[in-house]
Length: 313
Ligand SMILES: Nc1ncnc2c1ncn2[C@@H]1O[C@H](COP(=O)(O)OP(=O)(O)O)[C@@H](O)[C@H]1O
Ligand SMILES: [Mg+2]
Image 1 (tube, rainbow, N blue to C red):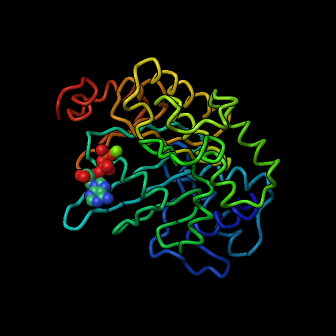
Image 2 (image 1 turned 90 degrees about the vertical axis):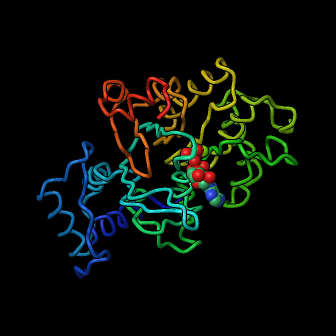
């Protein structure tokens, strides 16, 4: 993972669209947003622009403050489709640092596609995706790999390698992308398995695990590289209600313990309400409502109402 200081330098220059010398990196520099989603005051903007132009960084304390102003994930007017079939049509979503944002929407509306766009497995037809202050849609594969190290993903099916045991599955990214020693990797895997409540399961094969255990191993693998962001695709789908609640509990717990930003895709309203501190609803390729669970429950939008009350949209 890139050192903090360097990440901040990139943040200061790319997020504001300015670079030393004053030339713009983007045609329309995006506004700086604060935690409430409103445009940051001119003073902040001038301070950061001025600093970038002068080619030197502000004191570390200020840089931390500035970093907090930037959304962890910012999806800006994304269009994406398969062949002639449009899926996302001008989708905007800002995900704040440390939040657990649940993305809801009916089956087939593009929730998994949205996660794959965030992680760079798909490229949008147009629009911008900013991860931790860096626009990623135009990055080359090698640069994208650097950004991907900030993101852990739990795939819908857990996507474990059936021929590998639990240890090899969790250690996979560590072997591929780090130069850590065998001992260090052993320790990390042990710690992560402890965190997902599966200590001592290193030698089991996926076929020997229950559905809930597979999800937890997938989760241990997702957090093995100490990501800043964890994406969950339908983490409770196909699980019995008790196991689903255990997974929900684990998502809440990990978000606090690891201090990560989480995005959870689900069509399970009970799970959504129990883990989210923000919710966003996708419909016809756009976000039609965003808010806290409380706000969403009282949202007047008929699409949200129908979804929350469980009737067909
Ligand atoms: N690799 C693919 N090739 C073609 N169509 C796809 C592919 N992946 C998803 N789709 C289509 O895109 C739409 C959105 O899919 P998805 O994001 O998986 O929906 P969901 O909201 O249920 O997660 C669906 O109509 C699906 O059939
Ligand atoms: Mg899906």
